[in-house]
Image (cartoon, rainbow, N blue to C red):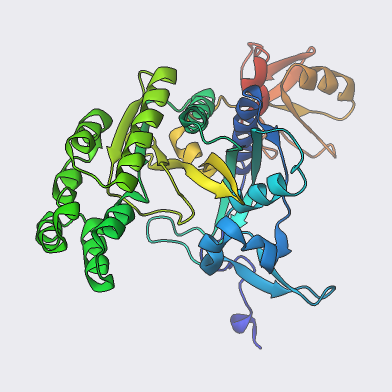
Length: 396
């Protein structure tokens, strides 16, 4: 192999990246701020392993992400293992096994990385940071409302406001199809038309499907502000299973409104995309402007227990959050270590010279020590100490 044929050491597999300074520190600080917000609401942290045996990782709700899971052979046990593609199924396993005897409801939170076989066109990354909350053991509408509110308040804690909560009902269309007794071919065509938001095709196929599917065109058009969509659901003639789903959606939205009256809430009754393990309302939190999807969650089953949760995406949150204040980097000459300790206690970053040849510019410093004070390079004014957690958590 010639030098020209040698692999580039910086080349990474598709969908994987190195996170460099200052973004890596900023993401870590942001995640810890989210976790602090979760903890303030009583959510206790768990830390599942990256790898589990395949039969437990992909059991229950984990089956929904089986196609996105990397698998490998454990050389110790000679059993197949999976590398997690989503953390929620692992938390469900912990709740049902290690915490199975604890009183319900359980409030658990987590932060970590997941790895997926494929990215998407809009989100090509295959390694994804997650931070989330799971509330396990309650089927109350107020439980769904709580996890939505905690996610909104956690994002507000890092400066992300102007959020919109999109509520969907992943099982609603299937309940209508089942009640109407649709044959598989028609069900597939109607599902595809709903997925594409093809109003003309939905109207035509609904007429073919019979009276129980007659509400679909109106419900497709009703997607938007929650009050209008709920009115369309109330006006529709629905079979019992679909009516129960609609009634639960109304109760959850009312509970969210009681907690966060100013939050913008939209509802799409016939949207069913997303994680296949959702069995009730599902949520997506969108940021302001072009910030995009910041969190996703909803109702699911943790084994046999009712559960609900929200997963936040720190990488997306970083794009939506304001930049933190820059922490001053103070150049410390040889022999000034005592003063450097005092400055670090005040919230400054200190960068020590290792040889007399080291310079502030070479070490990307913004300040130097002068008479025991941090002075901007080229200036005469001392710099005030960074204030509070913002100074400590900001990227250099």
